[in-house]
Length: 98
Image (cartoon, rainbow, N blue to C red; front, side, top):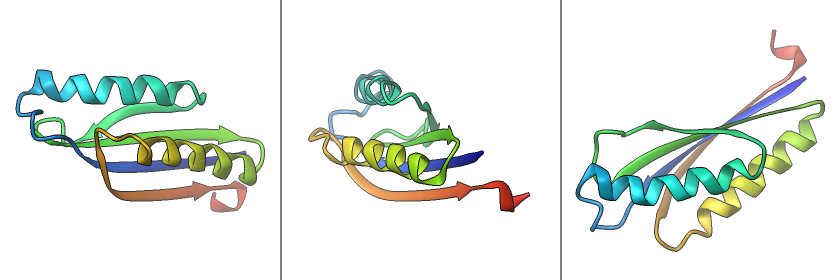
């Protein structure tokens, strides 16, 4: 079994100065990422206006499939015109990591 996780550090538009406005940007991104059969949540910067950290986890029987799923998710987030992708942190775990 192989597990991969990735964190996206996002800069939100200037009009996201309230938590309600921030949610209006984060929720559609999280919902869209769920289409890729991954676990996804806002995992950081919840109290900061204008910033968000979204985490994704994927599990599969082979390493290549996990990497492909994470790549598609990263391309999707990077392609969102309403946010700026500031950073990506990725980790992969396999059977030898016990």
